Length: 523
Image (tube, rainbow, N blue to C red; front, top):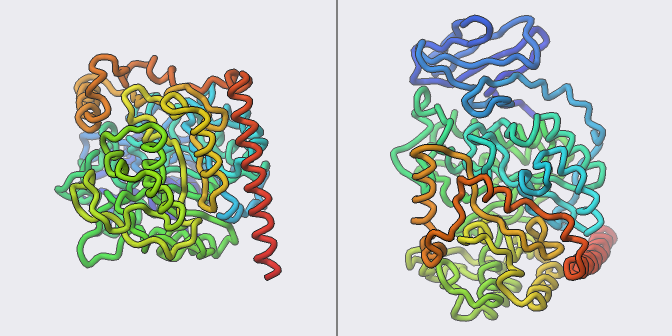
């Protein structure tokens, strides 16, 4: 697959540097001494440096005044304001080089935040828990976003450097070691990626490439202008980077309803899926692309297409979660209000047809029609779950479902979720009924920290209002530490029983999938 043209690339003679900076008059490469880069007519700056090797650290100086990291940096050892490091991705000695992935029908996902999954909070520390996932019956580890964000603590949705795994969790080779170890255990690894906005701290693109953005706003920042071919290529290059250089088995795309497509343009998502389809065809790999899309656009989905060609394998089905949450907890505030009329009926529709909202008017979505008919799609076009980072972390106190509902009723819901023909997903620790909260946390400072606190309260006032000052401060390191999974609790009596139940359910599911796939091969 053709490598993206962004970032520093190790060559036979040294390192090749490129930067798209259409608003800059001059760009210097900062190594030991500034070196001027050549400017093309289309706003690209280029420089090949002989004798340079992986490990070199560099920045770009814009118009003699502003020093910035590479927007396509492969690694930021000193966080988003530090220098970028040249990484030779071809040098990693993969032990699972023959891995081609697994079929989508076999997927049982577990969503995981690297920093709170273990006490160590690193890519390497996750390796120590992979055997637990395999023994439970999980087949796919899904990492919340790791693209480099400011600070040491973050959910990951504030990433600003889309090609660099965050250094808070380790180095690139540590992430590769995790993926390698997972593949050796026949575990797929997915990555959550965010292409609808850049985080609020550490994004310098406005200064030298303002054409990245339009004047419009998403809830989290300026709209990215995917009408520009360079901008579209930057995002597609990032996706291919994670799939090629790190060998992720799939990507989950965050809130694609906030990726704006200019009128008359081919959607960026179509081009991205097509590019990944070419990669899958060339390598013979199973690669799976999954959406989060509040607009419920069924026409974007096709779980049966072996090579993505403009479409996506599946979508997280928030409808399924919301209906079950209302049934189990009785809550009806915020987006749950759209499901209070008939939660049992909504669950039945989700199980039979996929989306609950297939064009019906949704009050929380501005009293407008939401969704497209989905009944013609295969059940595997939908990822079903009872918990995830959003619906847990967007609560004021970050409570897990077992703290809100009757555990026996939760187990019944788990049985339906894990045995239904949709693709099931658990949230880390859910397999043993963990009650550790998952709160919103980040690591900003000063005015930005205050703005995040206030903005979070405004956005989720329906969830926060009654708690007042009791809501944990997202900037307090103790808020982060309170979310770290307690693996010792897994061995207590009720947790052990829950884990055994989940294992039995997933073994039943595995046997059914094996039988179905065998029948398909001989049919």
